[in-house]
Image (cartoon, rainbow, N blue to C red; front, side, top):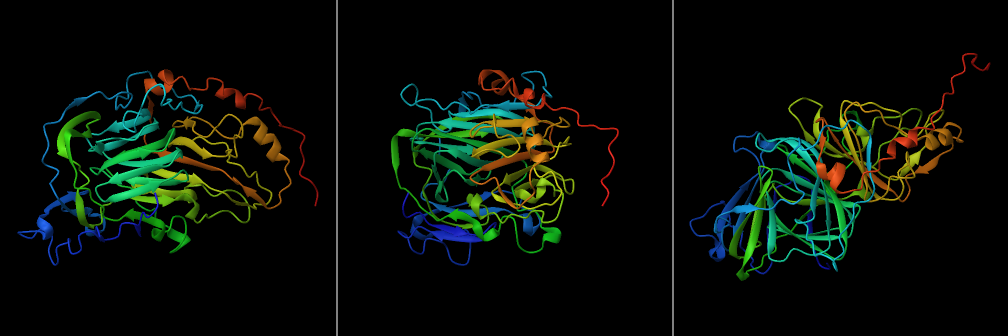
Length: 443
């Protein structure tokens, strides 16, 4: 959408007015007796009032009608969105999904909310401790409907089709190879432009932040200036037929009706905002001598737990880069992990599994489940000439990594009918190279 504007920075104190109403932000205070233009003041809090200042999240919204004016919420069908982690028995196997099916608009019109499907997750929204991983597959824009997640933050990763997200803070266009974060409680609506698919990481009880850099220093990885948040935009629109607000609350969906657009915020200020980020701006850190650094060097955003150094969830990418490590097996190594690793592919071919792992599909390697390069990748890279080479050119794979042991839903294991039951076979050709008579070469 031409003409969209953004403000740059991560976690900044922003302020924005719709240019149609200059001076709509109150001066010198948050809550005057009478706001400019006859607006209502409403605070949206993303943290406890008493949080330390660096972690305190809130924004003030100046709106035509406050969000409190609506009819009562009533239960709404959840479809394939769930927080029931016990509907099927646990499955510790390596799991891989073929690309998830996008419904044809000629057969059934499906918008963003109706197209949400939960694959796996853990924890509990009521205790504010856990995560969910979802796929969205849709073909139709939301019309006089918006979504509000009372349970946590949505990190949205488009894979096919750009999405125009209208929020209370303004509009964002998010295309494949970009991500966006809609934080807890923020109302938004999604317009699509054809068949659309992507991934969502939902986090309860924590917000995403930039990882600490430690010895890397002041610069690198995702730089704060490359994060963009929308500028104020409002619509003063009455909806006589009813505008539907869908609320995800304690893992269930509820809907209420109101007779006006919720996107009636004329001005706002604060540090609790939606934002987007282009993955091509990630400054990659990599090995330049030998061996591997851990994939944590590719972390874009993290949602920290209360245990130092342990994340509820990390969002990690594997972008195009140079591979130059000497006398090193360069693809990812064989691994068993105390974390859970869910991977998706936005485009291209993932370096460790060039066949089978497809854009729009996914894999899950659960806690302590072994995984690593397939047999072809191992054989090819064990004898490859170790010259500098571009890795992952034209590709973007990502990982949602979590300290939770995630359960897979019935939809993920059965209903979607996309589980690749032959996945384990990619390691079957691995053979022994053991030679008890091996001697080191004389130099």
